[in-house]
Length: 311
Image (cartoon, rainbow, N blue to C red; front, side, top):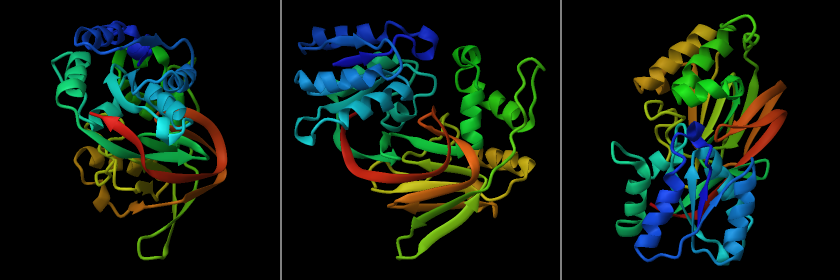
């Protein structure tokens, strides 16, 4: 069952889902393509696909539909839960890149289908969970969630991942035209507590907090959680422990050069959870670049080996 978001990436690749279905049917597979019609629809369709006996559910779109589809699959009993895979056509496609299902210049739908059929590996991967709801790639609190909140839809369609870069500077310093400008973001202190491997407790206060299940935090050149593995039973936590805006920008540059873990204003650790985050005032939150609103406190957990993926 292919769950296709026709509006992913501004509709530039609207035929990928149908073409993927054609490839499968040509090779003798019983394959249907269902298009999503609204936010959250993929969750319903994934449950329906499982109820109708699908053995493989493929999310065709970006990381948003990946998370929605996985939310639906996690509501299905494990004994009857279909396997999962991705045909990428979103803005950034972090999960597809993690599974090596996005390459170029070969069309991604064709490459993904051939891998899924002829060279597929099957393995169990971890999922994160934030206040009970699963996420696949990462969750962020504070500044990066404010960036997600401030990315204009038209710029996201036109500039893809680069829209997040320009939105980051606009959010941090309040740049931009007066009629579209948001107030400059003011860093908020967040206390993060989580168990350590030696039985002690991590207890760190940061002003940027990111929790990752994968290495990439957006584009492939932004490897924010460089030690993360999608099947190690751990979540990776990065905290920027200074509110200095220029230093935060400098740390972002160090991420690109893979030097940020050596910065004394960065704390990095891995944990089996649970992770408790408490804020001095409500901060924006996101999971897989989907806004979750604002909150004062939240709990994150890892679900080891919760999902079987084909890649």
